[in-house]
Image 1 (tube, rainbow, N blue to C red):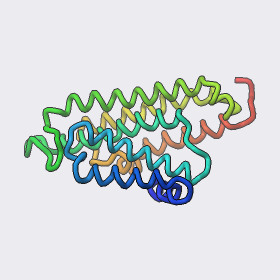
Image 2 (cartoon, rainbow, N blue to C red; image 1 turned 135 degrees about the horizontal axis):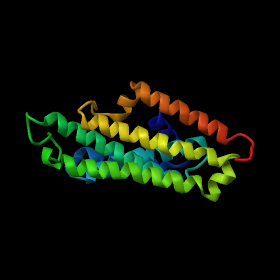
Image 3 (spheres, helix red, strand yellow; image 1 turned 60 degrees about the vertical axis):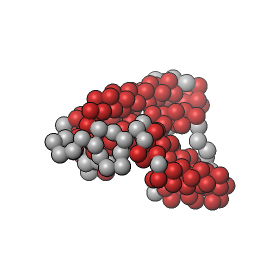
Image 4 (cartoon, rainbow, N blue to C red; image 1 turned 90 degrees about the horizontal axis):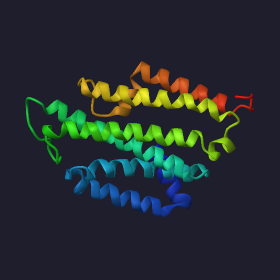
Length: 201
């Protein structure tokens, strides 16, 4: 859905985004995919470009707050993909095909990914107390509840990855995970309440 939105938005009023997305995607598949760290940063950038394209298609633009938050979040999710791949290789091979990592890199990648999760939560906390949030929500204080929820969700993804329960793609994992759906439901409720007329919180 996000990919379709990215292409639609790029075609209608942001064709440079489409050109950049295609160029980076090709570079990733032919070269960046094999380069340590460059690959996960490229993946995070591609995810962000999809989000940017979707915002163009919707005609509402993309704030710098969303850009910062999503960049850290997507970086963490990209690292989860690599760590899950490497954990499945333990005992069979030391290096994944067409990847620049070995199983010895798992520890440092986990640290980088968890740091990205906490950084995204920090950006969100700064947004919640900003003037931007106050101008968009009637009850921005309610959004404080989203910070521990999102951090819990990301920490749960990392715990599942550490236990070998992550099946390569964290998004697919979340779609099939009842706890993730519960977290998303609570987040939706918080956003709805935050958008209500002010009630003195």
